Length: 395
Ligand SMILES: Cc1ncc(COP(=O)(O)O)c(C=O)c1O
Image (cartoon, rainbow, N blue to C red; front, side):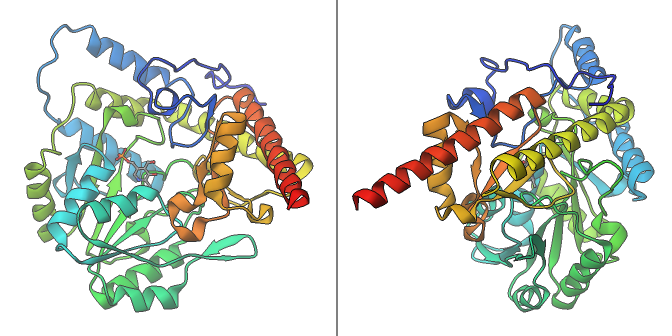
């Protein structure tokens, strides 16, 4: 472990903070939802404490300085130039996607997503009375690829595609070529593309993701970005929508307003600005720690639990574990690990039926916690095998 300026080692008790991860269920090792267990970047905490020391908490406005923080971050890190008047504030990526579905498609329309993918994409489409059309990724030689023939065919049936870039849960950075090809196909079929880039900063050290908008010149594209994942500030519920298409921009602006999703809470601006303007070095250290955690999992599985294979990935702190050799559905496996070991990993089938046989493991926690989780994973797999063996013998 390299020396770090920031503390990523201390295990923090998050119980009784109304934490979704720690307080909703009583699992000892919740390693499911995409929420990190590290202390936040000190500058963010200091800025929040400073704002909290002012004793009035009325309504807030979204100042230009918030948009400037986003603009500067994407320009200096990813070479994407955004302009203030093409950006909209929203109370989170999913609220904004929900609004966009309502204003840019009609009830009954099909919307394309690439499974296995973030499960809330399914819900947000279905809850808005639209239909999911899946372009399933191909899993070949331990890696995921896009089935472009299938994509071409299915895009002819939809008005909208929601892209996850980089992809949750498989942790894949889409290449410029792949993104360019998606743009070409969306242009061919006149499909509005939403590119959800919420996981963009969390790549392996030394690698970078590709913004859709620097990879394709397709104009009917909407970018969703937020510091929620990179800095673990999802609790402030804040994001930005960006599009260069003025017609789309105006429709989205109106819908966000109708949905009351365009105003911010009193701490959001301070948190976002402290993240993007003052916490970049913290993020770079975090990436190292996540990468080391990934190595811990890789080594552990190879040496102690080779029946489970880690799917190679270069982004996100969510690892996709290939458990197909266990010959059990991922729902059964996930439930068994919870009841037998108090270990909660997401079931792969939550991300589309094609994810069955896989588990998603969140490794954004101090190594001590992660190692305990891995011990429990092994103990759970052994216990499940023993039960299966016994029942076969009995049968
Ligand atoms: C791909 C993706 N989009 C959106 C979200 C949620 O974003 P928000 O909390 O801003 O609605 C997540 C959370 O895990 C995610 O993985």
